[in-house]
Length: 388
Image (tube, rainbow, N blue to C red):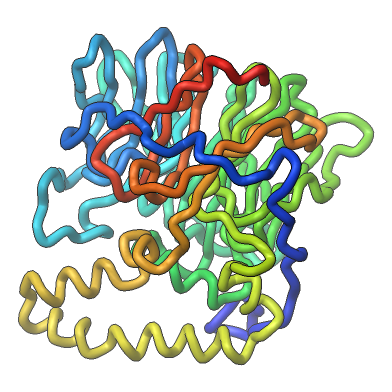
């Protein structure tokens, strides 16, 4: 029997003490009143990347779109189109998350949370599945990936990616906090097609970035509220070490000129810790919650199986998702600017609705462009006077 979660033995572990919001973490209102770009035209723009003044955005409609000259064009649709779908079904509709530009051609490498890893040709729009959700990965405790999340591409084309859970798919994000850590950091070698598990037992593995010299990777664990460093070259190759403990849950990471940006969809402090901080050392409570979630859903799943209708479809598809979480987590999020040594340079806080459920931040020409899993626009905040 394995020890991954509700299918095995739940164990106790600990999350580092919540950081105090002072110094470079001090609360401000720099993200408030963000501009709302393309409002009403983008459904939950979770991830944003930029090249040559063109934005590429992953959407809840199962699409990746390109924005150029204020025009929005679909680059790829991963199957069923769910634009303005009501009721919305997350798994049938699909959900692309993290993306990165390929270094072996004019392609996007896209993490489709349900299907796996796609290579998308930006000239033709053709897509090729590189790693499937059915692929069994690993020598010790081999298993499939249930929730593909973020990706980074090395100069030689090798792909480093995270999957957040081996237990739950994208429609049950909230339940991942009740299980033992089962996410992983994995390398996909493009030449050999070999998949190697670099780090295992991560508690909701999320964003990642490769260092400028490509000697280490920084990756996030949302539920553990931390960043870790894994060495991929040099004398420390294969070693993993703590990089930075954070005041809340980190999501996507993006490089900039002085280090990288951490999107924080929720900020915590000593008076308002995250639920996962409290649950980590309490396996019996986590077990109860896991069963509670499943038992609560059971009658709705049953009714929906024999009589699908908008009410039960919405309940089944939204219970446990980020849509549900957005109503219960504190309305305090941030972007943290960090250098490659783990020094916090500046923090941009937001407490209004303009940056709700912040998932990604990239810097372009003295502006922060902000992604989200609940808004219908890209947020934008000027940072022109920021010396960092």
